[in-house]
Image 1: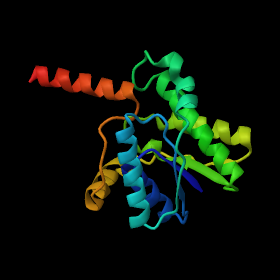
Image 2: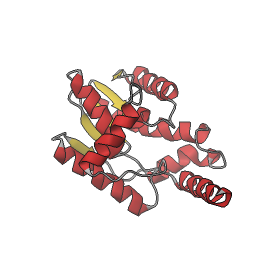
Image 3: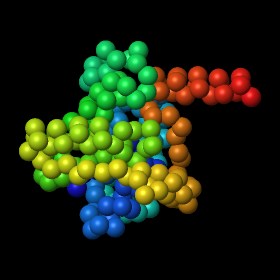
Image 4: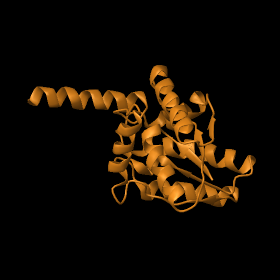
Length: 187
């Protein structure tokens, strides 16, 4: 199974749950949406760290920023959880599905469903659409269920993993900063 990884904390619970049912995933780090570059490097470094700690194969694919930007450019004015995010997920899952098929993986999935801010039903629908189109299988998940998100927080602390506080793109960083500023003003 090829497991698209958005970040090491979300990968913890996905790998743990997949291994518990006898599936050994290969981590696939492809995230052209993550900015600034320093943030992308932090998340990549932490994913490498997790793959070494847990002895999980990791494939890192860098680049793709121009194609990703084309996918979301018409929706940059929209907020997190909108069509902007849907197009971002579509872009990353399409690349994952294509890579999986080209490299002989029979199944792909993503860690994106570990986040309480992500719509697992939508993500799974997108995954299934690409699976059908590319004649490959997609593993439906909702890794945040059954305390999955809380477990990922616990595992991240135990492993000393950096845990980011925004989804990844500059727009989500700006929205997070605005929420924090508003919260600070209200206190």
